[in-house]
Length: 365
Image (cartoon, one colour):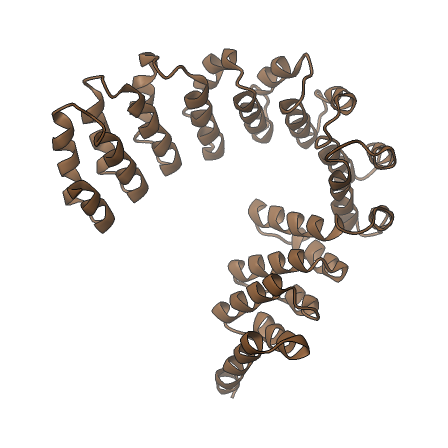
């Protein structure tokens, strides 16, 4: 009876995982991540990663094929922590079959964590693997060898990959080059600003964000109109990080953008780039207090709180008190507590009638 066997084996495997070391612990972890319940597999993967338990890589690789997304995530993190090159092939396979961008990013990060701690010679050898996905990951990993200062050998390898026939390898090379803090490299990438590949343009925008290039701000402004959302997002992020206030007028026009990731970054940029005393932004923050995304509503509350002396603020923040997200409710109450407007008390009272207990307590405080 499979269920009976599981009822007996799961506690035994859990005992081995938690109370033993060496091969016995590895055996317990290996069984749990491959055949255990969701909770057991997650726990075992976390133990394997935290304690860097040798002999678990193969089973963690099998766990990447399980149906539960959180099990796959913990298994990938454990493989990244183990730094065992035997984990590269299963991570590459998982990357190719990943159901969404989030998982693809996770598998990429963990694979790079494995490759980047290997000797440079070995990484360069891996970058010549017949497996295109592993080659792509190893090329991206080369960025770790040049974060502090350029390495001529690494730069030479990346330059070669820029002309690779595989599109993903070229993208990986630009990804790595964009993370090198060297103005000559930035200048080279600047020449790719008009590339037909949006992933290349995105990395050009990333590179310009942290650079001193004379055309950085102007190019990022142009990228705001790019037809690809990934490029737009990096452009907004870059202009926000660079504190380029002339971009505010154009960025403000994107507050209703359909893609939530861009809308979040736009609202963050509006908050960061606008003058705290500029009352012209009151209506914008008041409108975004009812955005569908809670992260944006939190920014709206912070924005409205800049105008606590405005007679409209207390009643407007009252809309945050009855928000569906307790984080927004609590932040609105926190801001209202600072108000000297008599109407603020009435808005705080509204917090007594919401469902969340912590919000009721905050309203009473």
